[in-house]
Length: 297
Image (cartoon, rainbow, N blue to C red; front, side):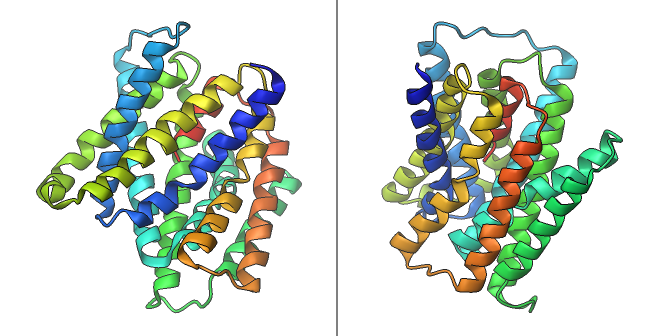
């Protein structure tokens, strides 16, 4: 893979991640069923990818690794469920922008958990995201669907941030594809008791959307991300994936007529700028860690 094709693969992966909310809204099913189906299809897609990739090395898990993957799976399940609840309540645009608040949570939590000093530019990042979220929210009435949906999306961003920090603390030993596969398996097992009663009522068309969500937005997007990191720096990849909200909002605008207001657009620009800035400030994560984090959404 050349740098040019790797960059193209990254943009395709970012577009697929941007489709996450779109497929979630198209599927007329509960958040628990969508997340269970996504995880199950993702496991199948990742197993196929690992089987086709000759360079795949399977790591023997220790008890500590199993505990960490279990925790990551639980955080991933909570992240996805809260995100799709937000999509159902407030729409793709608000859900995507609310989730995009995770860099601010990462800055704050990283300083607290790893006792790292928070720099001035990181404080500016938190302020940018906070102002962006204020602008994205049409009103602060807790009874409104937009506000409720945004709160679910912000919770999704918080859980994603915790997932990223857990991956940071425990990355380096397990190959990214293997870790993603086990995390998705944990998600599927956790959601099965909640999803099982309604699985028989899911229409074939909705299974199609859920299948595309698991295969394209998780398995294929993750595989493209991993493959591109062999050529492109993780920092560059992170900046490309900052375009995910742009793709998501544009697709929601075209498909669902979710026309963003000027205030929402301004808030979105601030949040996206914050994501790019945070990517540039990063010290350069390892390919394995970056790929596990990206695969979560």
